[in-house]
Amino acid sequence: MTLGADAWLGRTAVLLAFTVVLATVVGVASYAGGREFQQSRVAEGASSTPSADPQPVPSTPAVLSDESRVLARSAAVRLPAPANGPAGSGSIISADGLILTSAHIAAPTAPGLALLYGGVQTLAGAPPDELVVSVSPGGVGPATPTFTAEVLAVDGYLDLAVLRIVADAQGRPLPNGARFPFVPLGSVADVDVNDDLTVFGFPSGAGGEVVAVAPGSVRAFLPDPRGRAPDPRFLLETTADFSTQSSGGMALDNAGRLVGVASTRPAAGGPAGARVVRAADLALPLVRAATNSTAYVSPYLTRGTGSEQAEDLGWTLAGPPCPQDGRAFLDGSSAKVVAHVFLRGMARGEDVVRVLRRDGEPLRTVSSVWDADEQGCLATELSEVDVGLGAGDGFQAGNYSLEVFVGPEQQQLTTTEVTLTPED
Image 1 (cartoon, rainbow, N blue to C red):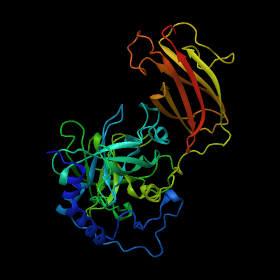
Image 2 (cartoon, one colour):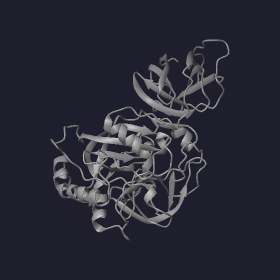
Image 3 (cartoon, rainbow, N blue to C red):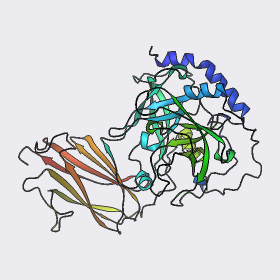
Image 4 (spheres, rainbow, N blue to C red):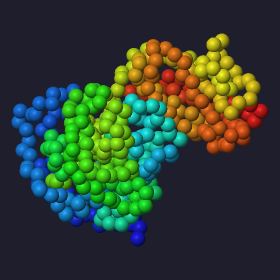
């Protein structure tokens, strides 16, 4: 049986009451109360020294309780797959519908992802502003599309994102005062090596619409391989065996607190083949930004120079990476059309995001890291794959454009356009 948003919210009222009790017992509240973790937040440039007057932390139970398991299943959400990637998982972390998940699920071309994972990040189309959220009634049975959530804060370098549920799956307003079951946020400061860690998510393959539970423990704490985040507990390596679509799902300690976000993507420079979770502590600045409706910009990304400029060198049919004789024009016959933009004033390591469109509709979004000196040519290929045609079929007629954005704030530098006709 498929439940609508109203019915699902009604069936989870008891779970919500339990959530509030659990939050009180373990010493944490919803994000609105703002748990003061014992460990200061490195994302805000603070010291890793514990607070002079830390909040009391209760002892952790020997096992994860049945009540916490039921709550975790109800607060787990399934998020749709990007156009060329797997689906993912997430967790409701507040009574008014904030969701914590992975950036590569919610915003696959977010600045920072190309640096974190190495290489170009490509998405067919453009990242959505809203995602359909599937939930399982009471955490039992297949998850079905029930809500719509908007993306509020993203940090590609941390691979974390915060969304908020804003409507039902058809875009209709939620009932007044709608409240959601949620898992309280915890801190990696409260767990140690060999402590239990239980991952909840929606696995890949058969049964991927049902919440799966992967028990395990903390194998090791891993620092940021690039050293941009100074906290030595940047990642937790775990023995929990979870699969691809569990990325973005919750990792709970035995008190039922979300202490990490599961990730199956191997970071460049990180341990190959390891199952890791990202410290929940790192998500707090994103949660605060989402709560306060303020813009979030990652402090870990390479800052731009403020002097970036772009010169449109036109479009060519294949040919060299950059025209040598000024503005170039289409000539000849080829299966590839290339847009050329000359960039100046760039900082090595800053993010570059490109959006290719046909008649205003996004065809492809590409995120990469500028790995050159202060200036150079940026060549972006428009192939028949972009327009959904087979080799030799030619291009669809239309107005094609390339938009170029740079830096953590994604400043738009230029838009270059070309009109293709069947003769081109």
